[in-house]
Length: 223
Length: 220
Figure 1 (cartoon, one colour):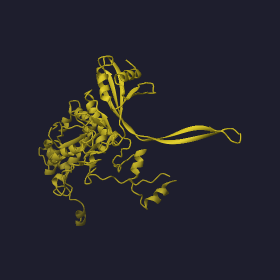
Figure 2 (tube, one colour):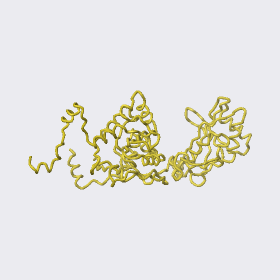
Figure 3 (cartoon, helix red, strand yellow):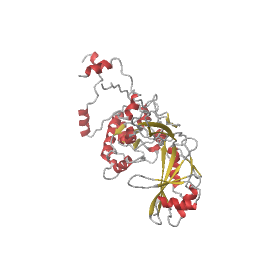
Figure 4 (cartoon, one colour):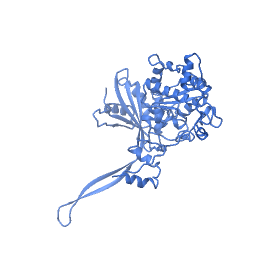
């Protein structure tokens, strides 16, 4: 099968002006993926499905990823010559910048006809709040339907062109998206018999204050 | 025996157990209405044909020939809650499924009993901190028997059933100790929670469940 770079070059020849970049995977698997812009995503998906060399006829998996806003501190070193003639000083300049967050959808494509794969596609939303739309690939691969509904349910990504975009796991009146990093779960930690770690911290909020009589007794019990 | 002593202790039974055994050997069966009622009740506990997760597989195994729940009078798994006496909550109760389970419980006629089978039905089990898992069915319906295990073996379910039978045989059929279906002052059904925006509303039924109070002192 062609590498991700080769597929990108062929796609760019086919769709001039499309936003396609290769996201490299530094791990051992080295499964590099193609990050597509929203404008040409549907047409590119159809091309990948119908192309004679690729024939990616099966979408096996659709995943969501939440990338929250991230503060990045960059350090730049510069040397300042000493006016008195001594050794040059090294000055570190720290700049903060905020990398905007986004939601990402990952598609894993295989070819049953040619027995190869996977080709990994990524689509990104503009941000995590009001621009959370990506084009749906359900019209291209029917298998995406339920999985895109799941990503919509748990991450809040809106798929434009999906035939039946409803929640699939949680109930319809549910407002949150539980797989987002900033999801706040309901505080029902009032009864945790053996809490530890993060659960212990949450359970402590429900512990009654020790009574006046209990505290000296507990302290007196210590050796 | 003075009058003062008889006032504070219950009167001795009219017929002792030894005398009853002697009568039974002679072919005379002597019993009370309460004994007859609880005996019949405890040996015809018909479960609801209802499973939620992997514990249901063990429940099915218990009903088959190898473990044979029929030995204890509970082989008649009813497909309708109207004909069932026992709700075996066998598996993880998700928050989305909980109102349906409670509605099934409300549709069962009294006398009815509930067994929480397995870690998930008791407390949420390994999924306790999940965003969509109910932390124990006892937050909404009264549970008679808890069977721990993940999943419990069929023998454990049979033991739970035997314990339930013992519990039923201990019931009084009149007076303040009578079970709820024989008393007018106790409610038999449980309110069904609504699907809220973040959680079930209410998240627990305060008439059935309140969090046990634990006073812990901080370790120095």
